[in-house]
Length: 257
Length: 319
Image 1 (cartoon, rainbow over the protein chains, first blue to last red):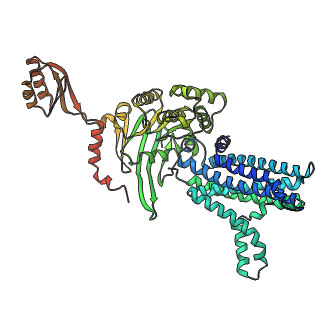
Image 2 (cartoon, rainbow over the protein chains, first blue to last red):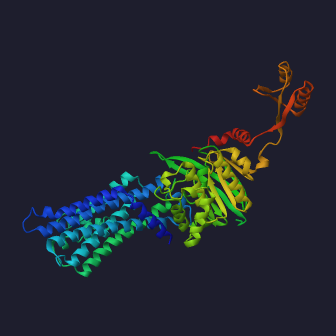
Image 3 (cartoon, each protein chain N blue to C red):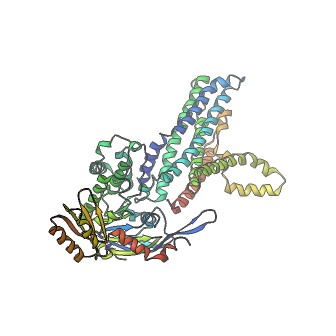
């Protein structure tokens, strides 16, 4: 109930963020323009539209999640708006989870808008029945989980660091997670024993962002199995939960002054 | 610890590590304090003395480094202890996109309130703090005084038995200050406990039962206001008018000080006898005696006297 009140207030706050609209509009314009851009290719128009749609949603959604996540946590303390709230019978963890749920709801709204725009472009190109429902839902569901993971890391870093450093740290972790997912298969096949050991360490210390990603299934029309989707969903949500627990523990011990 | 007390603080200490060299700064050191239920308690001290640090520990914003505190018998480390307090932060701040009712309803839900009761109470408090006319404005458009009033409304929202007010008169005009003073007195009459910090001592003199003075992070004196004030007469002030210029030197002779105003003269005499002799002389010379009153030590003077008598404390701020 209390976390829900914080979440509701956070939704109101986020919906007044100009930065979010700027990024979302830019993504929607790019998705809208994918139809025109796709005409520059021969026979690959569907892939281009799907690729631009999903990639724009993920990229701009990530920026929204990170910038809003950091700003919302930092602002509560910097502007002292949390004083009157935290001086009430609500735990810091409840407060943080409330803020997070509010942000997650706004991210869901963003993903829904971008998914609708992508679907509209694919419908225009292919007509009704032209969208593979499974891969489409799978891809955008995991984009949402990806954004939730980004927001959780933004909350984690913002719970102990300055806003600028928090943005840098979060984008670095997410970026490193993507790079890691690309190089991991190569490092595992290399004869270098050190790299193999490093992979084992990174498997537990860095989120493998490639696992929270099904964009290619939509782009290339790959089949999406329920097992694969559930595994990726579980992986993303586990990392999200861990980052949030870390943020809650740190924020609970933080002096708000 | 007794539950008769609204607040009990034992050895409450807060140290910070600041800067790149992690310099240790003692913001509060070994504070022992007890505030009885129903008291209006003034927590005074200059800026940076440790008043806000103490209050922030009580309301759960910062954690004590050492010691403990209880609110109505419940540890401040337990979030439920905050169910019985209403907190007005120094320079309160709200999400600036909210209207006052929205802000109150948001904070009321965090206190466990809901539905029609929350709505009714929010409306009632808006009226009470004089913000009913601003109900359609967002907080962004509020003046500092209006934000302070909203801060007070949110502190009273859930009708808590203990009010913890950090510089409640800050940013208010004289009328607003009087309203807050009256409100605190009314809360006291209704049996509420009020613990408030200020560095403006006249506020304390007019409303408090007990006072604690904190200096450089240490409580230097605590007790009933009447016991802290030195009740002895320090001088006697005489105001008179309608006298010839020649009388000035005669009246000034026995006085500590004399001031010529546009309509009257004011003299300060060292004791009642000297003032009495001067008053008789004024009347014998055909003048008008406007006022004759003893001057006692003010809380401000008491504070300065006590502060200067604790020189050792001043050097303990930074360890």
